[in-house]
Length: 267
Ligand SMILES: Nc1ncnc2c1ncn2[C@@H]1O[C@H](COP(=O)(O)OP(=O)(O)OP(=O)(O)O)[C@@H](O)[C@H]1O
Ligand SMILES: [Mg+2]
Image (cartoon, protein in one colour):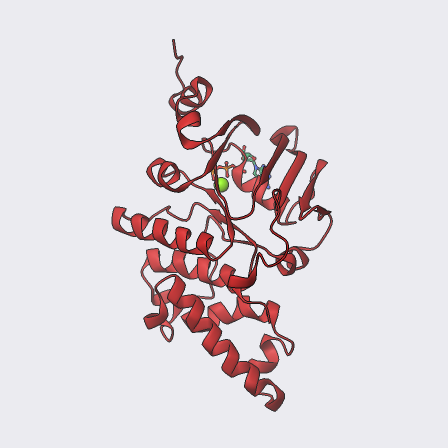
C-alpha cells in the first residue's frame, strides 16, 4: 500500500504536472485561454488572479471535471485529458473545493475513509458493512485515517460529526480527505477563505508539512500574505490568460499584476 511519504520514490521529475495551451470557453467567453505551465516535484506553486480569472476552471480542467476545448494536461509525462475524475485521482492528483464538500452527517474519520477507499482492495462500502474479509482492512483504515488527521491537527476530532466542526476545521478536513488518496499533487482551491489570521498561519504550516512529505502543492488563494510567504512560484491569471509567472518577489513587483489587482494604471 502506498504511503503519502513514498510519493516521490523513484520518479521525482521536473514536470510532475503540466498544462499545454489549455483553452475552455463558456458560451463565447474564454474562461481559460492558452494556459501553459508546469509544476516541479516538491514545489509550492500559487495560482492567483482577480475573481473570475479562471482559476477554478483551470482546476476543473486539470482534474477531468471539464474537457478542454483545446490543449492538453500531462501528469508525469502522460496525457490525462479524457480520463475520468476518479482515474485522475487514482493516478495521484487530488483537490479540495472552493465551496466545502463534506459528508456533514458522517464523522470526521469516516470522511477521511471516503478518500482512503481509493487505495483499498475491498472498497469502502464492504468495510463499512463489516464483511469479514474487510476487517483487517478496516483496522488499517482507522489507523491510516488517524495518521492523516494528525497531519492537519484534527486527530482529536476523529469521532465528531463533520458538520459540527467550526468552519476552519471543516476546511482542514477537506484537505485531509484529499490527502487520504495519497496524492503526488494536491490542488487547493482557496483553503484560507473564511479562516481567521491564526487559522491561516496554521494552514501555512500544514501546507509546508504536506510539501515536506513529498507532495507537490498548487495553491489557488486570495490571501496574498499566505501566498507570498509560502510559495516557491506564483502564476498570475487575468481574464483566463497568464499575465505573469515567477517568484513571489517578481510577480508582486510586476506592473501588469499590480494593474490587474488595483484596476488602475501604473506609471
Ligand atoms: N460552468 C460555467 N458556465 C459558464 N460560465 C462559467 C462556468 N464556470 C465558470 N464560468 C465563468 O468563467 C470565468 C472564470 O470563472 P472561475 O470560477 O474559473 O474563476 P476564478 O478565478 O476561480 O474566480 P474566483 O476567484 O471568484 O473563485 C468567470 O467569468 C465565470 O463566470
Ligand atoms: Mg474560483
